[in-house]
Amino acid sequence: MRQGELEIVGTYRFPHEAELARTTLGAYGVEAWVLDEKQIRLRWYMGSAAGGVKLAVRGADADTARELLGGDHSADLAAIPEARLPPAPDELCPRCGADALERVSGHTTGGVLLRMLGFQRAWRCRACGK
Image 1 (cartoon, helix red, strand yellow):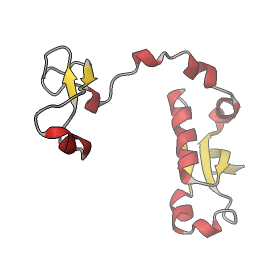
Image 2: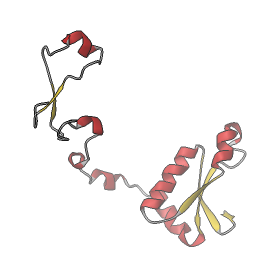
Image 3: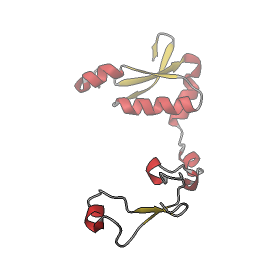
């Protein structure tokens, strides 16, 4: 199906599914556009009647886009070791920035009750001691 110079390569029930597909194509260098997203968000009950949220690419990229969207990329993700993923900001020491935090056990200043209620962190940095 074509819409002007663009060719529809996928239709989705929910806008977030179309955005995920667009992002996947973008990662491979294929420019894509999500069509009818706002209309479906406003009138979600008419999504099927409107043909769903559409993903469009240039006509020259349509075959490549369909191939990328139809492929199984789980092997690509499995090749990325989790140990190389960066730590989350709350997993870093606020003083030195190291990712060497460890949970503190036992009694610390402020008491166990405050720690249980979440008012005081029960973590210590192995690098700087904070």
